[in-house]
Length: 446
Image 1 (tube, one colour):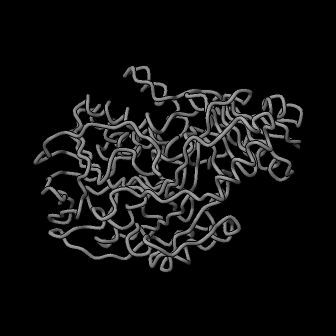
Image 2 (cartoon, rainbow, N blue to C red; image 1 turned 90 degrees about the vertical axis):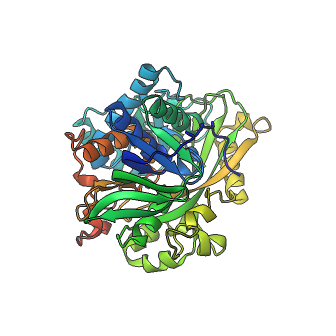
Image 3 (cartoon, rainbow, N blue to C red; image 1 turned 90 degrees about the horizontal axis):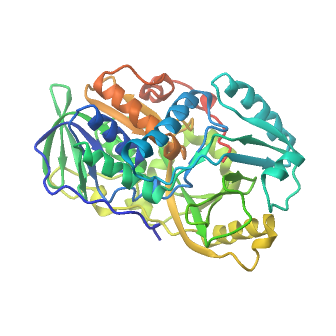
């Protein structure tokens, strides 16, 4: 079941020409459009379903610096500034709150890794402190677990996915961007070796540049045009609870579950390290680059063979511009949440917080498809071989928090402005130039 998302009103008429077409109404596409419109660039957002209908409305809501790859840290620092700035500049509540983030553990290797990370991050001006057992317990009131230690990032934050992305879409509209939901892009149009437009289910829209920010579907659209893009999808299950008392206001990561307080007083609970892999033809083709990641995560995976084998983003499909595309067949990826994971998460929650037993219940549950790259690093980049084509995808579960910074960087690259941060960690060409992505891979800690 999809989570409740604030709705966005579509613009009535598709333009005939814009400077930039953004494909995808998730946070990567919306923030890029917002930044482009802010600078006077005409932009249209095309979404096959509805704004934030897929992973941008189904994530945990964390906006964290803690335990990010070094190459992502400047982008995340900028994102936190933009999260706050958007709320202040536009007067719209995104549910953004700087409440801090605490990780707790009973594993000595975690503490060693956090110590190394904190020293590295301090060079970027990020405050992160490794905790003793007593300090961890003091920062986690009501938590009954016995800790070896932890780590605390006081400036980390969260926002509410159900309201944040639709609100940023409204900001983009106020600045002149147009939004077109239930408007799938069937194909890209090229002229003289560069992008010249998109062919949608409602007709041709001419443009100078296209940003592919289609989440789990980016791979399918790009490979339809012969562009190699290494991306796979893993299903996650999440739930939120009825309002609770006596739990930290910020984010909490334990070895089996992660949680954070919601603006409505409940908790959003994620089941760390567990997911479902939908078997697919494209998945088989990509076994080699994804094998190291699979080996690290296989213990927490279950497997499924069903509808998505034929119709999902990793299926192998052929279509033409004058026929129905796969993006119209599946308007919104809305897989069923796994009941066993919800039960596991609820048990983990009440074991850690015994005072919640008998009082807390699941208010809503949902599943989403997390798009992954082999090195767990997103692509925010031009495609050098094809002028006018840009990609912002493969966020590997990190897209929501970094979304504002990613949108800023994408807008910089599209316009030819000075990049707000070093774009080289996010370059597309690493997927096609022989880079060993397994060596670059970072082990995601949540």
